[in-house]
Image 1 (spheres, helix red, strand yellow):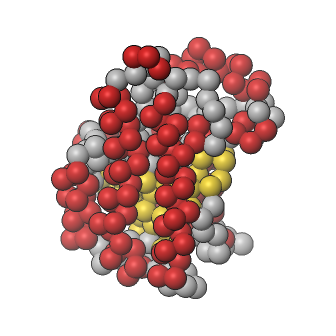
Image 2 (cartoon, rainbow, N blue to C red; image 1 turned 45 degrees about the horizontal axis):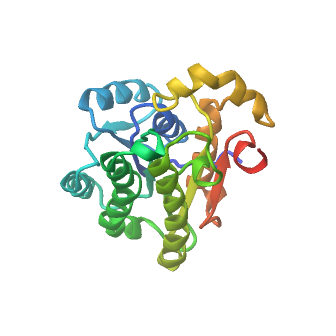
Length: 256
């Protein structure tokens, strides 16, 4: 059973991996045996995360601002220069923007759609040679896209571009799963609900008790909840799963 959920000997890249959900996933993969490249916009945040993760295994900082197209390609080149194969790609870097419908700015639409939807596509595209090199039909390479329950149900918050980008990422996951499966690459998405993160901090401060009470499981997500589903998808346990969007939300996205 321990080997079923092991990713020992595998190499992973986690974008937005220096904090929040990305760091939860990075920690899970490191502790399950993977060498993990942690990328985020701020170099100091990457370094701090890697110092902590290195207590449990092998982690490497590779900062990049994935809101910029040239930085997406630079990150892919950095990985290509260091690794012949990439077993696990976690597309987690993202942003949100809230504003009333009548005044929602074009800049807020473009920033969120570009980082949440365009950049994962471009990075996946650029890293395909390394993913194909790592995967086989028996043990595929894994792409894990981090979506949101806001892409599954209608949030009460006025985050129009965020919801649209995550719904788009969920369906892009299915489209890529169909195309890349025969090439030895699975593509799945995690749809988190409320977890403690910088993006969710203000919402949880204001409404955390009400959100927890509304969920069938009556609590906010914990780091192990996110690490567990990521390790499952990345390990032999998840080798026959592709095209799935898995809510990790205590039931909020599917029952409320």
